[in-house]
Image 1 (tube, each protein chain N blue to C red):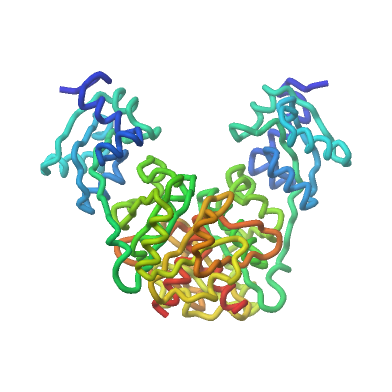
Image 2: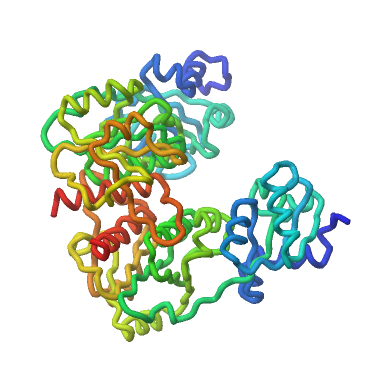
Length: 264
Length: 264
């Protein structure tokens, strides 16, 4: 039996999870497309319900994914192609959507020796946030903390840009900036804030002890409170007339300088 | 008088420049939108003809740009909103298009002491190429060389992603790979090739003398010939299960390691 109506209860529930409010309330989110759902399976993420349509069976990879899902304990619900397309956010959901349980990390990610953390303050472009998380994963960062005003991690564009890294990096959201700064200070984590008006080049500071690298909004940079709390304000050297780097690029360059110092 | 027909000769000529073949033949290309045309004016790029429509006059910034263009020697042609929209590639060309003369750099960019060059081999995503050029500009690279199989620099998506840096970085296209390698060797430029199977981490090689950093295609990396000609094959350390970095990100991280060594 295929479900074809938006009024079906399961479909209504799925649709509600496209809104931030319900994602928070239910602690769940939606994945779209073959590749990211393959990644979720591989990383043993809590897949709760799969919605698929005949479109998924058009190619071997989709067929294989469905076979694997049928062998699991995950609930499978078949929709018509039209309905699945209508619910999905992306233009080509490839005939598959999944409801996933969020993994909730806590303040624990701040504890431990030689932490390398990344704080993302009010970054608004989902592609930038996704690329930052992908790069943090590659660099082996211990955790990423996003603040109020940062785009949702569970936006389809963000999810896609992470290339699966959202399942591998501990990510925490902390809306209370004062509390976050206090907690970081309590854990004796050095705060290194990227700022166009920074006093040192990013490669002239020491990242060897517990460190949080802080990057801010694409247009205006990190908030005053973060600049005020900074142990160091750093900048990346810019030649000629270039005004700035993309925020994800800047973040990657700084994180990898920390990696260089730690491995070197 | 406003031109409203696709059959107008000036409009036909403009349209031809959306094809690579005619761009090469005429040595010209098209810019779309207020911001990039402002940048072109500021960088004294050879703006030849401006096509605009009433849409441009809807806001102050567009109005000011038109005022500035009217004070210049540049030919101005008014189109109907519909026609301009029809010709343009981007969804919102903001009522302005420009025909621009290409700047043709030659092999000279290989000569000189302590060159820092970037070779981009078969990168296919315009956003990646644009971001690479923006980052090369910020880092003060002496020149970028693109090879056959690399996406067009004059694609609107590439142009947009450069954020104006295409007017500031010397960029050369060299379709003959063997010749390029020979020329680089003749100039005693060290070839440092980024490769997932590289033997050294990117921060363990020396970029202080004339160096070309070579990055390749998103999926398969640089071509065999480039790997064979490499003085060093380098990789960026990847932690955990991350398979790779985005090619633009990887390029930025390596270029900035060279900058660090040169400034440090």
